[in-house]
Image (cartoon, rainbow over all chains, first blue to last red; front, top):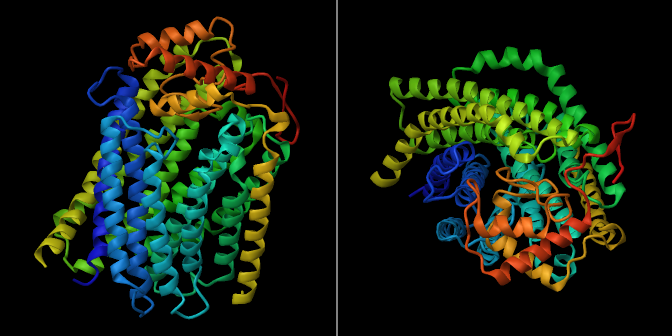
Length: 442
Length: 137
């Protein structure tokens, strides 16, 4: 069946999102109500949440790239067999990872909490993806639009940073905690940058197709922003290690590079009125709504990221819930909004099944409530983090007292998290239904 | 922007990144701070085996359920016995993992070496005019 495995990637991505949000809700309730659902303790629900959300980001962006690259360049994908093999490895490894978590078998690393042996099939699957992508992409015109550069960059840097994240297995690195931690932050900073390249590339692609304006992906400003983003991916990670006793030049170079994001902020503010006028025109198009929301979340998270990158502020925010606000705001507000836009667009194109008016209404309600709940969720984390940061630096009350103090705010965070989950359910349930009908009817 | 210009910028950035990465690998840490003994390296694997990072942080990296453990071994009123008591009995928030005594010893050895490596969270610092900080200890 044509485009089947692309749809499988996307559908599995949406299911991972629901699963990830479900475990996120349980984990947040365990955070504020200790003892809740003891049969799956927090040290299991957290990795389940994180890994399923990371799987959502990769599955949905990869599914999109496999579909968009050949179909919108009028070329054939280099190998559909490799695409199916890629999906099979992803699915098989994903199931093994979930089993490991349920059984309590951990590798115990932040983000990659599964046993290290499972990194091998993941690495192989990305080699397959890279091979298929580049063999297909090089068949097209030589002057690639910016999103093809971004996808290529995302694939390359995933492989680089994923390998770097496992350097701790080598004797040269595992014997020193500072060296190991610094490398871990370096790898993770660029890893997030690599998936951002896949996601932002998808956003520019969608914008170009919805607006029917091929200039969007080929403009000079698009490439300048890409290179600025790439510079930050490469050198901006070290604002996470201002308090780690490592070489000063690493920290201050990161501070300098992070501040270059002020240019992006200035551009967003400068273009704000124009983009607002344009967004009103196409706001009835479902995927476009999500792209507009992601723009607003980019602005909010960029301001937060810039503040966190200033060492004087970072001393108060590092290791607090403000860092979580930044991570969640970016993952849900930016990445998930863009990827939901992509899923809605792609499922429409492949299945060609219309939504009923009731289904559209549900998705639109989901969209509105998602943004409202996410804002409450994000603000409550910032407030909790600010209180914690202040108390930690003042060093007058214990960790337990700080946690008791911020618990009411974290209850608001948990409740709004349930709202985010239900809103995402409302948005995704019908696209999943459409995909499953298509996949099982053909 | 021509294709060639884009390629030149990309490969210039990439080569700088590779050189930079190499420098990062060899220039950390300062004065060999953070060296782990053989037992501590085994303890680190125990820390990972029980997924301690899901709830605890080291230098701010990790979960938020429990406290940052960077200086748990050299903070006044805490230390080896304090840590062992928590690990052995658990708390309302932390389950008792029933960790064998020999693994607890290795875990404590790891946390002792981590404690010697630096301070986290940083509470004693001065803020400079350019937004940077001078950490006093």
